[in-house]
Image (cartoon, rainbow, N blue to C red; front, side, top):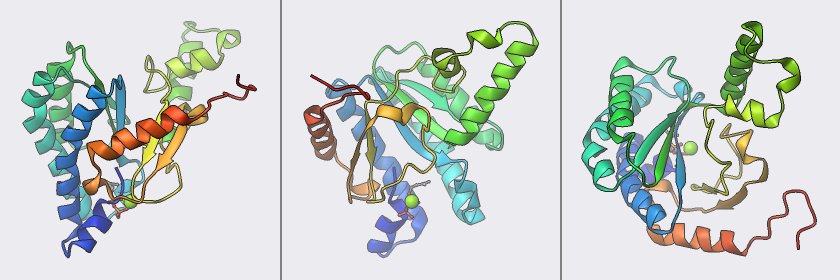
Length: 224
Ligand code: IPE
Ligand code: MG
């Protein structure tokens, strides 16, 4: 969900106002994705690298996140949205973890779209963390080295039982992955837009999905 800061600048506002505006947009996009038949929507909320930002901005984002999660529980439940989390709990403020656990718990039984929140998430951190879990399982005798294959490795990632994403949408006009789902994106189709996240709309989501529908996916093979 990139471009909040630039959106704010363009509107003569401080960066944090952009984050506020960006948070407001998400619920309409979740509904629109659900209406389009999307089963899993993963949003990159905060990366393991975003801690490098000025303390005031980081504090604002964390506060906004806690408040947002708390406020949206009834809406998630009304729309049958199951919220999940990927990322590292280490380093997240206690207040955010509390609201996060509450939203995960309150929506766990919902059977509609999965809204997967990537918070304090980094693809490299995820791979290192999976590796540590695998080593632990080998050391305790629960896993044999010869049984480690791609399928097995995947199960140790934060995304565990989720399918690899079909489509990656990057807002804000940059052309990079920025440490997002490094393993999972291997054959994901990428669609980018110059539009800053606070200006992203259900119509743009439809456009992205329609473009995706025209792509020929070969997964390294020769296609049809
Ligand atoms: C995305 O918007 C929000 C987070 C990374 C938390 P940015 O804050 O990166 O916005 P730009 O890239 O500065 O416009
Ligand atoms: Mg950015």
